[in-house]
Amino acid sequence: MFAGGGISMESFASFNNNVVYFGQFSTSYAQAIGQELYFGNNGQYRLHIQSDGDVVLRNRLAIGQGGNNSYSTNYSLDVNGTGRFAQKVVVESDIETEKLKVTASPGSVPDYVFGKDYTLMSLNEVEGFIKANLHLPNIPNAKEMETNGQDVGELQLKLLEKIEELTLYTIEQDQEITKLRTQIPKLEAQNLRLRNKLEELLKRIENLEKNEKE
Image (cartoon, rainbow, N blue to C red; front, side):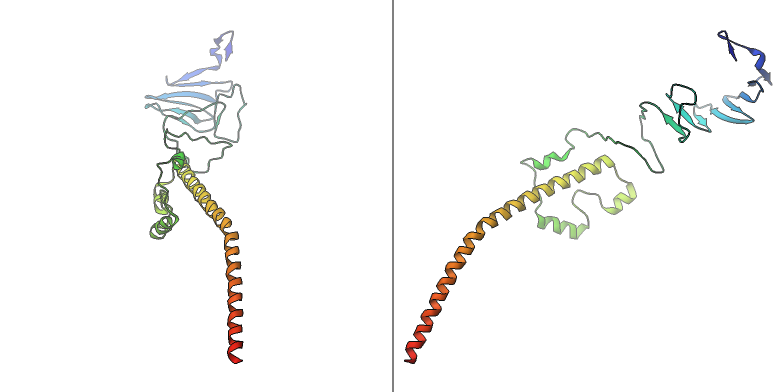
């Protein structure tokens, strides 16, 4: 134990030159085997530092918790602060989070859909593509997703592209509906005039038939 800035060797005993027992009952130990280093207690190692630098931990790991027993026992890894992984992280089960931020490279956000140079497929073309391919244009098909998985950020951008295209289709259809609505009163007036002329014509025919009978 620590005392006055030093270590009291009364609680330590060394055996075979590579095992050190410490603690009041000598239940905890540190052991070096070749280039491997083990730490444990009660006859089982808890921490193993391998010769290649890999670290094996048999229980929980608390990082940045700032005090003894301040970490949560509900998690095998409890990190207080920002963790950084320079390469990919593989999770074989669910991920639960309150917020997820995915960065996008310049030019990848599909606001280009609203640009003058963007060619929007007609709905007839979209219908033909769907019938031929059974999925939306510029969206991976089911087999590709099932085989290769999904890039969440990339797929979100593709879905945003579809939403922006749908917005343009909706605007176009709304303009067409508005145009048709303005034509309805004109068509109704024209229909009324035609109906009046038809009634007038029927009356003339009726009068001609009466005159022929007389």
